[in-house]
Length: 483
Ligand SMILES: [Zn+2]
Image 1: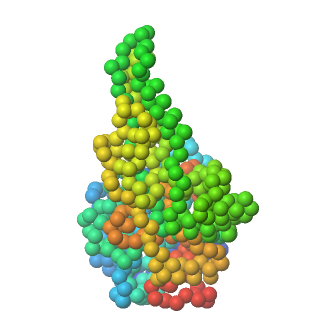
Image 2 (image 1 turned 90 degrees about the vertical axis):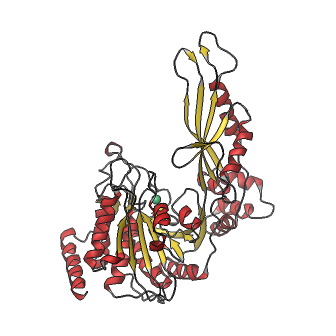
Image 3 (image 1 turned 180 degrees about the horizontal axis):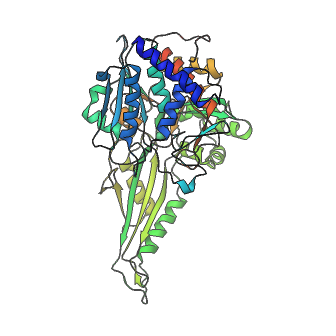
């Protein structure tokens, strides 16, 4: 192992020379993280033309090079393109393991839409550009670096740390977390899960203002609306028309707003945020957590898409298809309605609600599952109950956040959906915690010119190093180096 250490450090020093010190990374682990990050960005892991296995294998090789035993490194999955990496760093076994979960796949990105090649790691004006810099190869690189660092320095956590880097979180039909839970639960079984795909370090010009920890998330659901009609010749219109029926019903959906509803998590979120934001917004947040809530304040907050999504279930048409010829009365009109459902409500409950909102017995409302299959009824499960804010997770989190940034930790709800849905359903409470700050208003995940501030990346690296130590039995003080 000593030999390995020497090799690794030598490599890092060499990299220092070869990549330069653009961001003053005198620290070998900052450079290692930089190089792993670059390597991951430059491996295309999209569902269409990319290959997740290539990225999983590349990371496996990093662990082999660092000296991890082959038996602690698994690359496995349902097919050649969608293999997942599972690595275990052994601790003393005093406590049950922690699973660190990140996805390797990224959303599609077209060269012509971007200013630079999305699959080139571009270092420009103190930002790193590339598909996955925000979502979520920055955090993948951080987790890989931490495990290698702990191993090389001989750190023994009080429990095993398991890293799972997985496929098809963004789409595709081979979700890695689901597959591992079904086929190799023993490899990733843990006391709780940290998933940096969720949560946020909100920054202004790179300076953190708060750290959001996702304790729950909304439930995703698609519904297929369909109306059929005998049709006929378009020169002889009939009052009953499939397109009018469907668009009339969609107009009723447009006018409908799901009820305002706070959970323990979102109530806590708005209470805490009221102390962080200023002016009218702060007053409105204070007014909606009162009993009864203030309706005018709720209305003003709902004008923001982000707050609106926290306050209620949302349903919105995302696709429309109708008719079969320019000169024929339409025989069929269909729409996809995408809903994001508050925890505590089921997809079937929302399907029935849609039936009543659309208010037309000729329109069928059916559920579309992840595989794209259409079903008459939707599942009855009620989404993810908020995880309990365990002191053994929250105290280390609050301590390290205070030490590094002196800002509040705010439990929140992810309005999107992530792999937490699988790990939570499997009975492993999942905490959405990232250390990588993104400027408010600069969220580019899934979008063009995705980027992350270099400084925020290295701060995220230092954050996770300290946080994982604090979680695994090592007191962290202000003197504990990040790296
Ligand atoms: Zn993601």
